[in-house]
Image (cartoon, rainbow, N blue to C red):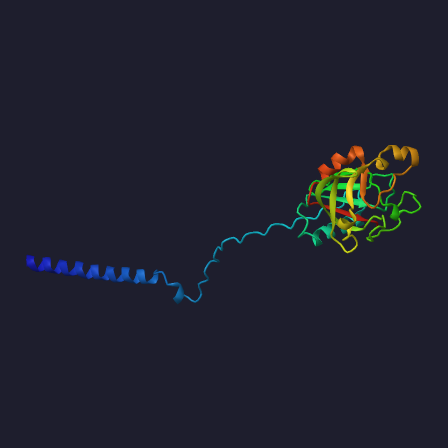
Length: 235
């Protein structure tokens, strides 16, 4: 009897264990994680993509400084872009504003980073002002015209000639491409000194060169250097 009671109790416990296992198995099946491929209603979270490099903001073109003719400045900058393959130094440009008379500082040296302008007087050619009124009336690229030429020049090397220390210029446009042959240069001259303004109200005239006051020459050479652009025009 005792043995039968033990066997009966073991049978009951076994049956109970089997039932619990079945319930647990059912619970696991109900709560099982379903693979994404089998779950049509599952929406995967958006993937975090690597950030693309942000392109650098375009460099804003400098506006004309307040003391510079804006139309002339725009033309000078466009000329610098057009001749960029030949202009070695673009940090500074010189503009000769020949719409202004020779009594005023119309040779403007512009720092293209800061916008700071240094201005001095410069003479024009006698062939550009036959009446010697102090104002340029025409340009010419013709040899022996003694006239100022219009357009972009690039500053070249220095030398010592009949006007003392001078700087050669190379004309970059069809309107001034004879500059080297005509010996159109930057030099100092007595007739561009300040006393001329006091005595005559205007500077004297060159033979087409950019003649500046003798006392300004060293400063002009420092500002120009070699490989920078001079733009001469009248607008």
